[in-house]
Length: 545
Image 1: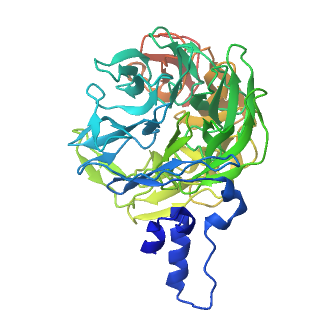
Image 2 (image 1 turned 120 degrees about the horizontal axis):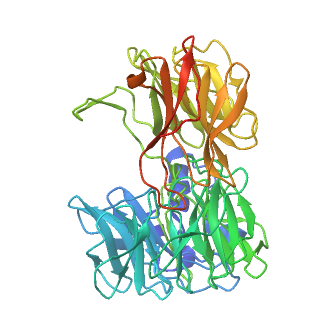
Image 3 (image 1 turned 180 degrees about the horizontal axis):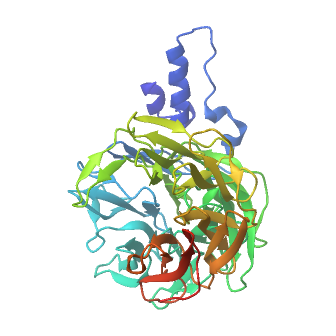
């Protein structure tokens, strides 16, 4: 196997790590009568693919440098081995952490060394990488079209720094960055937060302006990528805010506002100079012929590289393509960040929960404190219950591939959540003891996320995602199943919570929500609407403060 990997003649050499895997599997089976699996070099498709693999090692992380062509004429093959310095490891893997310069001569990457996360730059003709001062805490690097500047995110800011020296310059606020791209006309497109469309800002800085819009069924957009002429931009749109394994790739026509869907089930698009649209799907890089003039798919999709690291949480795939056709990627496949559940006391001290490490999000403690409802991410997103006394983790919801955002009723007998089991992601509730199936609560055409129950359990506050007004707060009366808007503005309103009003006694309650800055600058604070209680129930009036 070692000799096969090191053969001088490319035709005799194994062409990919996947080939090595298949050969080792065959050897492990130990059956001399079994014909060895064919290498990918024998597959007709890959006769048109010229792959040149190098290895970038960083602890357990591996990156491969690939020179490739999807044209029929083969190109020269170059193989390079790159070793990260001892003590360095790749970081920021929920966002793209590697970027090739447009001319393919430099590689930027995010790494941690000595407890500091920052950007590093390596010239491809050099044996060493250098740190870039002023990029501490950086994520998501991207190059300017001329390769003289490097953009990145740090400290909830969009920044740029000259590769010839100097300090980093801040271009704008970005609460939760999810990708950026720099076009030849001096504009930078970026995704500023989880529930936002793509925005744009001049490379000199200024007030960000909306660039795209959320279409029906979309919660957010991210991973923008300008086409070489700057007249159109590829991007990813998702039907959920936490799982992007089944997102869609779209294209936006700059200056016209027109948007088109191109690929279903893909994320983080890129453009190859061979005239192909490249995207991540299920931990593999796929390519499809793309007419950049008509902005339309012009062929069938084909796999390019298998086993590319891809985050289920953000949809980020770890690869980058230069304008010269070089490709860098990090192997690893689809994976979610593993988390531990912990108790935290009022002094901030943590005590671990005995539950095994999983890709947990949205933990919700039952009113009696005995059980935990939590979402676990993977290829599907599902709800689980963890019994704290018995230390047992059990599946809660079984219908649909997306069940998340649990909210316990005040009596702890039921759990509301959102699910796609019957089409659009709407609201359901289900007995917490498993005695019955899910009961549908809303039937809206837009996406719904449960947030908070009123103290008597008769009103549920939830968020609706509307393409025109963004995130809006609604309430649902359980008795009559009547949903009505509570706060609907051009801004994004989210995370409403019912709370008792101590000043007014238990006969008063309020629904509060943090003010979100979306589109315009707004003062941070809390808005409340109060209502009087009748017979222990809580209603919401229109008075505000």
